[in-house]
Length: 384
Image (cartoon, rainbow, N blue to C red; front, side):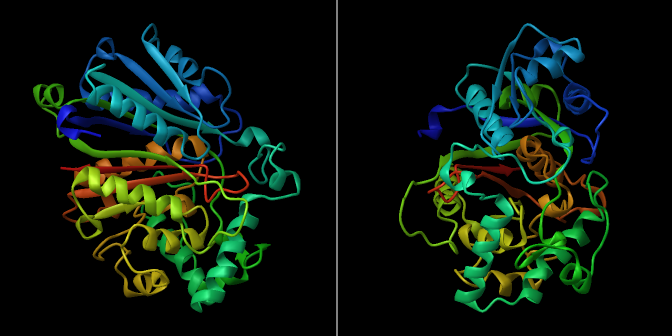
């Protein structure tokens, strides 16, 4: 992509509701407060909105229209995107491109999901997939990755549990987190077993949630006297299909996407001040440290134990609490990550602020298909 031919794209408004369980609330009722907050924060009139991009995986038809009409805003282009857990980050990428290309000047991006309608349990996957039809669910898939990683690199169950402790230390500081409770190593290890080696605290909670952004061209952002955050890279990649052996300890799709995103942004892993990565299960965070180049392959735990990825460290990862603590209403996650990083770069993240953060990244993957590392991966880079 020729970045010189594209316009600067800025985040000028952010909105988010606390993630949790809202069984008696409709999807539209979950979504509209986040959109209203983002528009109000932008200082722009709703009449300025050229288009809306809404990401939801399981929210049903016309989710964006349902949210926007609740606010009394309609008539513009509204596009709904499904891409599993990458749904709203894929919506963000399309929104970014629409502004960068000059098609639109002001757009709204929504991520919204209501998983309580399923009554609990694992996410429903497509039965036409042969692995799913044989009983594959996401906790089992990540558990296999964890066991293989432990075999290859000597990671212990107690060390793996430290990822959860860190996540909940961070999430306890975040008023938008679904779980605002610190946990000890013993609590993680002695919790209800889910699938070996995971206990309950190794797994992200499902629930409901919504987040929203207002994006504008750089010219509009500067005229509006905001404190804009620039989106300096936007990358959506799909997995490579193989019906044979694949290395379950290596996040190939994320590594490939990260390489492209770093090249687009003109930076490297050493330049990142804060990151929000897709830690749906504890092993995922360690694997993504390696895929992004924050450390070498097999050295994820060493980076964690050094404190580098905790608040106060060199590159805090998931200061929001991540999916493990903030929660994972799947269609809302990507935009929620972008809200978090944007607020971090504006120094208004409150008790979980990363001091001096100027460059951040977000990362959301979507899985659940046989033969692929993941089905989709979306990475964004942000800068002040």
